[in-house]
Amino acid sequence: MASPEFKNPVVKWIDHRLPVFSFMHHELHEYPTPKNLSYLWNLGSLAGLALVTMIVTGIILAMHYTPHVDHAFASVERIMRDVNHGWLIRYIHMNGASFFFIVVYIHIFRGLYYGSYKAPREILWMLGVVILLLMMATAFMGYVLPWGQMSFWGATVITNLFSAIPLVGDGIVTWLWGGFSVDNPTLSRFFALHYLMPFLIVGVVILHIIALHRFGSNNPLGIDVSGKQDTIPFHPYYTSKDLFGAMVFLTIFASAIFFYPNYLGHPDNYIPANPLQTPAHIVPEWYFLPFYAILRAIPDKLGGVLFMFGAIAVLFVLPWLDRSPVRSGRFRPLFKVFFWLLLADCVLLGYLGGKPAEGIYVTLSRLATAYYFIHFLVILPLLSVVEKTRPLPQSISMPISGGGMGAAVAAKRGKADA
Amino acid sequence: MSETVENQGRRDFIVVATNTMLAVGAVAVAYPLINQMNPAADTLALSTIEVDVSAIEEGQAITVKWRGRPVFIRHRTAEEIKIAEAVSLDDLRDPQDDASRAENPKYLVIQGICTHLGCVPLGQKIGEVKGDFNGWFCPCHGSHYDTSGRIRKGPAPTNLEVPPYAFLSDSVIKIG
Image (cartoon, rainbow over all chains, first blue to last red):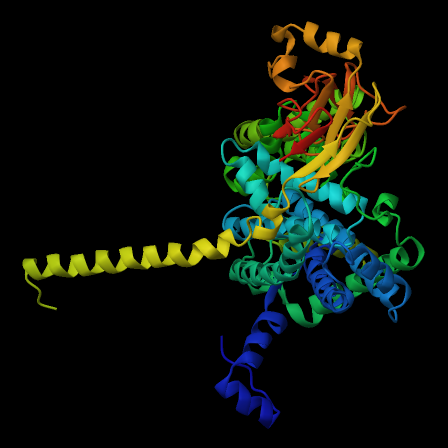
């Protein structure tokens, strides 16, 4: 496509030498986007907003935080009480993690329902899974930094997961700790890595967007764009829609920050870390609960760890498990049912992950874990073969202006005129 | 490019030799960068402690800190010792007889770290849950240990570890 004509002579001069303005015009202005995207397609830009919010507040917090076992807890309390607006910045950062995960989980389930992982978007999807893994590592290490009881014991339990690896497991755990328990060397390296990883996420997000812009967004119908009549330019249509979504998101986010800042946290983390006493009931942050439930459901240490990581690994190969050529769940009557069952199963796993590992909860966790894997490894491959999908519309424009509603309205109007 | 076959062989040698040296160099650079994360010299230096066990009454237990982690020392009652010794090895997930775990059966010295995922089991203080086998119970994921610290029920794969220790006299032990 031809470069746009910039009126401003300075912009023109720069763009001729460094075509950033052409690039931005290309990818954020004229970028042709399917015209039928729903609000579920807002979540990508919201995730970007959440990432920037986390990086900005995180850098500020790092200016006041002390990564040392003797000072970490007190320095966080100092941020909360003495640093100007420290409480606000920390609450944004703390709740921002939760909201980042809320946004990303909706984004993922959107992709699952509309088959956004299917050809030719497999790499786009896999990069998304990489981002999820990086987010989990970042969130986990960030949670350790305040050095409260949950920080300490969460770090102990999660790093101990690696001890399940045969032969080298214990060596790896000692290496991760830099000692014989979670201690000062662990805290300082987690701080360094917690600072680094968001920038790795930014890097993968850029790759994610490059892969996205190769074929453009999927859409609620899941069919390919057939021509210019199916798309609208990104600006002003989707910039304004994304902006509206961002306002709604920020309203909810602000409500949590100002009115329920500790709702998603654990009171135990306001007790300084004590290596000699484990809290009676330790649970990870809510966004890890489904995975935690899977870990505990398996009565074997190595098995539990393998299944937990397997729950994410299975997402990597999803494009090759679901072979149905139809992307959107709208035209897949059976898939649609199983999609909602999977969502319910994940919510159930989340609930069970927060309950003590005893009695009925263990049995339910096992069933829910089994179903999670059955969905991906048995149901989806089977559906690709047996499901009779509904006929697809000819193009994105067809159901809107061709047959369908538009035509019916036109016919009605014709009648009234007559 | 007009190399003869002999020339090609020499070139291959140069390529292989260069790549090999690059790989050796990469490992040499990577090793210190990775190894720096292992325990530092001062961390390793703090690895023995001495404990006077004579003050522990029969039936009582104390927790001491060794290498940043708790070590349980329990002065076991005659009954607890009897129960621990009476267990058949066939009933154990990680078979070990009591005699090989406690040098002096009166004092059981074990690492207070659940072998599942590293929580501190309950059962040291009076009134704490001791689990189904009257030893220790890990609240994190529900592992039960007996009066010899052996795993009896729950997800933990092995018995509570016995740290290296020695009796310096009748009442003082050195751990580490």
